[in-house]
Image (cartoon, rainbow, N blue to C red; front, side, top):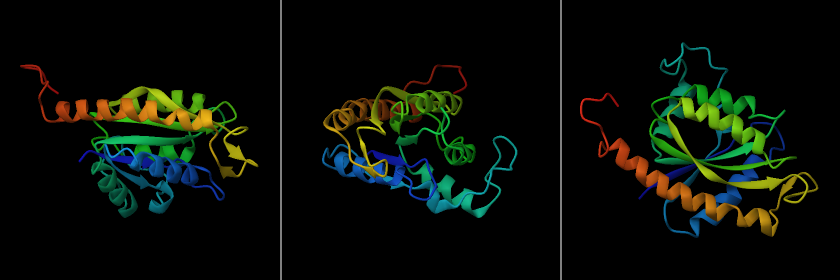
Length: 192
C-alpha cells in the first residue's frame, strides 16, 4: 500500500504541529487509501546540518531520519508559520534529505495568523529543489478559528473541510510519482 508520512514542523515546547498531525492522521486513516504515519522531527533530535551539500548525514540522528523518510512514497507536511516562513527546525530537517525526497509527492496542512500560506510558499521553493511534486490544494487552519485559546488544535468546519481535497490530490500525485520512480516515463537517452 502507498505510504504517506505526516511530517511535523516544530520542535518547540507547547507546539501545535503534533496536535495537527494527530488529527490529520485520524482523519486520513478513515479514507483507507494509504498507510499514513506521523514522522515527528522532534523525536530525531537533529543537530544543525553541518555537512557538505548533498553529502550523507554526518551523524546518527540524521542517518536515522534519512532512513525513516526514505520509507515513504509521499508526504503531508504540517507547516507552522514562523516569521512568514517555515520553521528553522523543518528547514534543518530537510537539509538532511535529498534522494529520500526525489520524485515523490507532497501536500501541505498549514496554520498561522494567515493560515500558514506564506510558509507553504516558502516550503514549495525548498521542495522544488529537492525534486518533490507538490500539490496545489492545501489544508489551511487559522490561529483564530482553528486553534482554541491559541493552544489547542480544534479545526472549524471550514478548516476541516480543506483536508480532503488536498489528500485527494496527494494520493493521485503520489501514485503518479511511483510510476516515475519505477521508470515508466523515462525518456530515451535522457538522464533522469
